[in-house]
Structures are given as structure tokens and as C-alpha cells.
Image 1: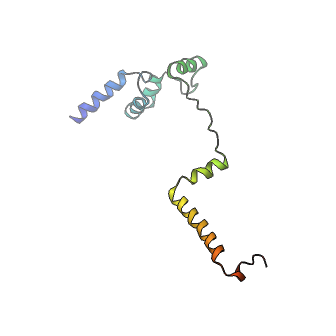
Image 2: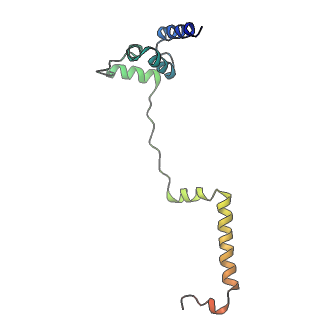
Image 3: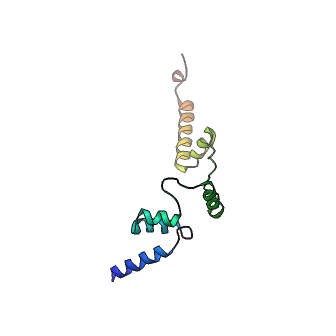
Length: 115
């Protein structure tokens, strides 16, 4: 039964064009039927690749795969994103409170900074 199902699937893949199907269909064709069959269905030449006309037709049909480059975040944006973490906020507040309390409650001889 499994051999019949695999044979039926191979026949289905052979009858479909990779241009009409999805990318996964091409991967199935490659894994089941081999490289030559996939190249035939994609209508490309392994030695030459795509010509300018073929490339333009595919670009019109499938669209461009160009992605504009990402803009890097500034230092201040990265720093601001770090303060979205509630635990970091708690630690910063605790640090500030600790410094203020230490300065207010320190003995007079320990307040002589830089002497």
C-alpha cells in the first residue's frame, strides 16, 4: 500500500509544474525525482542559469525577492529597550535608594568625599 501511495505521489509531482506550485513542491520533486527533473520543471539551464528575459518574466510573475536593508538602531534606542524589563527597573530603583540612604545616614567623617 505504501509503495502504491509513493508511486501515485511521484506521478502527481511529475504532472505539475514547479512554477505553478509552491517551493515545497520543488523540494519534493528534487527529493523524489532528482535534479534533472527539477531543472526541467523549472525550465532553467544548469550551465547558463536564467537569461534576462526569463528573469524578467519570473520577476513579473512571482515578484521581486529584494528586501531593503534594515536601519540600525541607535545607542539610545537600544538602551531604552533594556529598561522595558521590570526586573531591571526594580534593580535600578533599589540601587538609587541604596545610594541615597547611604549618603544621608553616613557618619560625618565618612562624608568627606575626596579628602
